[in-house]
Image (tube, rainbow, N blue to C red; front, side):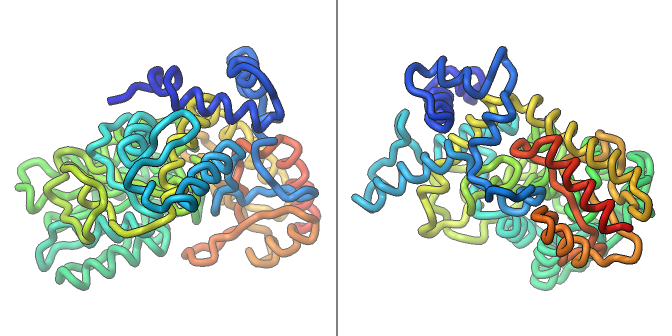
Length: 431
């Protein structure tokens, strides 16, 4: 396993530093370039913001839907694209980033380090939706078993379970983990989970950070509930904990592979700012033989590699992923998560003070992350988003979710001024 220190001291970290320097217009040594973005060991958030090619004159608080590429990632993608255009066979003969060879082994090593995992336990996909389909379709399931999910999970998670259940003669059962998302507690959630796991529950599917409510599920505590429920069960009857982790990855300071889940699925083109069309599936070693491949894979080796759908894809995007990881590691995962929390707390506290606005996301940082949901009395979610856009503020709403609340997403490209501008506009809309 490659350590974070090795990554940052080695070629991946060097490439990130050099690219960050180019993004700031710096010329000279890597150390001088680094100082432009990281000052006295801390990120310069203004310099970080300059990495993103954001539309001038707009406040964009919806970047978590499909992230903008930082310049360091754009340049890596362009560098690889030129090689493929010049010689498409370089995909198999060897592609290089500015600092050296890249390909699936390097991609998996970088992501494994970020997740606290082993590379061989990672499969590569193009998105969370594809990863969930790979997992649910592959889980060894008998007729009569069930997949238990929540009515607050993203529709792609529910549909992946439904489609697989139809094939396996299983069923999907939707539950509610809480009554009021803004007032929920870890105790309420774990109690509900404990009550809903049955002897024939084959998969418990949860979302690390729900896009429809902003609730950050207490995955570690849920994992302990599942562990207790599995006592005395054989492998074919064991309840597997499958986590949709796309809005937790790089927004929460946690090793995704150490949350206690059996499977973690996430796109990397959201909070991690990975190239668009990239994603991962991590499978714990004990569950590897419980998930079968669905597609022929182009990634060699055992472990989770055979779960990776094969075929030709945007290799210049996939093989640039190590640069995205290095970008976050250079800033510091804890500092990135703290910045996300700082801005989301500012948004939640401000929304709670506006008459006619109801906060729908827990105010406690431990039960939330970078998505803050709210509602405005007498206004639909579409109307709130549209009226904010009239003021050149981009919000979003979960149009395919059970509860389509307007949402504020706070990322490292945002500033406190962005939040305050949005709050002023929401207050005007609420009048």
